[in-house]
Structures are given as C-alpha cells and as structure tokens.
Amino acid sequence: MKVKKGKASKIGPSKKPLKHNAPKIFKTKKQKGKKRSKKSSQAPVVKSVVPVEASGRVNEILSHIHQLKPVRPVAQAAAAPSSPSAPSPSPAAAPPPLKKPRAERQAFLPPPVPEDAGDGGDADGAPEPQTAARGKKKRRKMKLAKRKLRREELLAAAETPGAKLESARFRYLNEQLYTRTGFEALKMFSRDRESFDAYHQGFRNQVAKWPVNPLDLIIKNVNKMPPSHLVVDLGCGDARLATSVRQRVLSYDLVATNERVTACDMAHLPLEDGAANVAVLCLALMGTNLVDFVMETNRILKMGGQLRIAEVASRFDSVDDFVKSLQAYGFHFISQDLSHKYFYMFSLKKVANVDRKRRKELPEITLKPCLYKRR
Ligand code: SAH
Image (cartoon, rainbow, N blue to C red; front, side, top):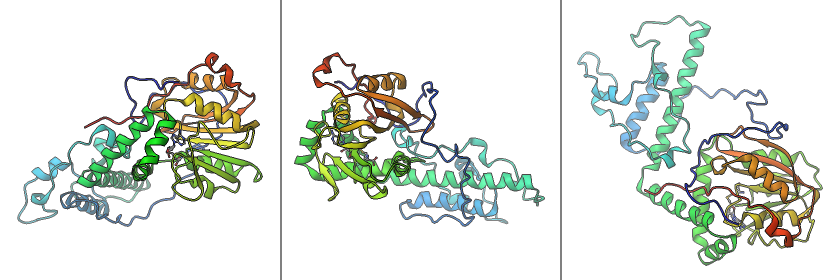
C-alpha cells in the first residue's frame, strides 16, 4: 500500500469535493444554530510570548479596541507625523510590520482580518449616535480587531528561535510518520522516545490553533452510544478519548505516553477478532500502509460495529474514492461531514469480514501525506 507521492499537502483549507447526500452525524455549532457566547469587552491579556516590538503594536490595537476606533494599518501608523499638540500613540515607536509568515505557519492561524476591517466610523473623532446598527458595526469591528490581535500574537510567538527549532523538529518527525510504514515508525520511536514527545507537543500546538478539534466531535458522538460499548482508539496520542467518554476505551499508539496507552503498531493490534463495538481513527491514518490499518480495524470490529474517521482535509484528492475504497474493505458508508475547514469526518459501519488472502484484489487506499514545506 502506498501513500500517493508527489505534491505534499499542507494543512489548511482544501478544495472541497462534492458532498454525499447522506445525513451528517457530526454537527458544527453553526449547524446547530447555537450562538457563541459574547466575549467580555475587557482587553485581552497580552501574553509574555509576544516580543517587545510586537507588543507595541498589540498595545496600539488594544487602545483602539477600547476607544472603538479603527485600527490603522501598520505602515500608516509608522508614517503618520507626530503632532506636538496631540502626541497620541507614539507613531515613532510603531513597530515595523511583522515578517510575512510562511504558508505552513499561516495554515493554522485564524483567518486574516479583511483589509477594510478598520475603515469608516469615527475616524474624525465626531460623536456617533448609538443606534442599533452602529452598535452592531462596532461590535463587529471589535471582534475583527481582537482576531487580528490574536493572529499577531501567534505570529510573534512562532518567530522566536525556540519555536522555530521546535517547529522544524515537528515537521521532520511528522514527515517520517507519513513516509514510513507503521512498523518502521514504531521502531524509530522505540529507539528515541523523546522525539515522540516532541512530535506530540508539535501536534498539540498545531491542532490547538484549529477552530474545532475533531476529537471533541468524536467524543460527543461516542458519548451518545450505549455505555456498554467497547471503544478502540487507534493512534490515540495521549488517550484523551479514554478519559472523556463513559464507555471503556482501549487506547493504542506507537509509544505509550501514559498508563492508559498500549504501545503497538495499529497494523497488528493485540485484540481478538470482533472484539470492539467502535473503532476511532482520529488524524491517525499516517504511514504508507493504510490498507493494513483498515484491514486490522475490520478484523477487530464486531459485525455492525461503528468506525469513526477524522482526517486532514488537504490529504484528499477525492473523498468519493476514499469512501469507495473503504466499502471494499467491508465498511458501509453512513455519513460524512465536510463542513470543517481543516478536517473531514466519516462515519461507517462494518458489514462484512475481509479475508486477508484477498488483499491483492482489493483497491489501494490513498491519502496524500500531510507534509510541511521546508525552509
Ligand atoms: N488521535 C489523537 C492523536 C492524533 S496524532 C488525537 O486526535 O488527538 C496521530 C497519532 O497516530 C500519533 O500519536 C501517532 O503516533 C499515531 N500513529 C500513527 N501511525 C500509527 C501506527 N501505525 N500505529 C499506532 N499509532 C500510530
């Protein structure tokens, strides 16, 4: 089984393939019509990770948030002549614009604030009537300014030498996982346990920047299933699923980061045939032998057992092909959720056993490796 070579995918929005008609089982907050609770209008705390020059810019943005004034573009702030009569937010101290971030760092950041986000309103200082429409506009401006601030904080943090080194190491280890078999990855991490911790720290940092973590959706979904179900978490990381659902969960990963995890290659699980009611593969279809992972998942699931998969959106050339190939491995498609920016989710159930001897007749399962650009 090969992972398709060629242009490596980046984590980030990808062209979404056509949706199936089947109903979604994973719903976004948006889909449920829930509103996000309004954030406090208090200024966000400026974190210490922001370098001095960036914090000047941060403070400028914060002062604009308080005054409900539009934020001037950085270049404009730096160019503005200082008036002796009104020496407000010291233009001389305005920081230079932050270095344009690299695409791979940007992929996880909140979307950029539109160019016109700070335009209009009370630039001339004239008092405005507090109409509902204006109030709404100002709230939106505040929201955009806060989002811009958060983005600048993240960019500034990513620019520190330590962060760059960590990120380079994470990229390297991530690449190893996508370009080796599970068995090779197991050997690699068994020899160097510390690099597994470094990989996971990088993984957590990345996913923390996503608006939604797919594991949270899986947790919600699994919690709706009968408490007697046995759940198997394949490529479990730190086994958060096991501590977040009411069912019993068996957690497997290449390295056991805590006592809940059993170290193994998920192509060879220490489980009997048909042992589990539910199998979860959350961002874990790494390695060049995806077919082995899927066949093993089929083996350990009961007939009618549920399979939940979450994968990085940009890894898919064709969602339909992916689903079709899973069907050839004894899984019936139930539903999919392609509404998230960074990942897709699939819900399937086992309807047939797959004979390993037939492996050669079965289709490849291909997903692009999720690699990052080199510097
Ligand atoms: N499911 C977790 C962690 C995802 S990171 C979460 O969503 O938070 C992907 C995990 O899959 C990594 O911990 C990696 O070690 C694991 N993994 C990749 N290939 C594996 C294999 N062949 N066998 C077991 N675990 C594997």
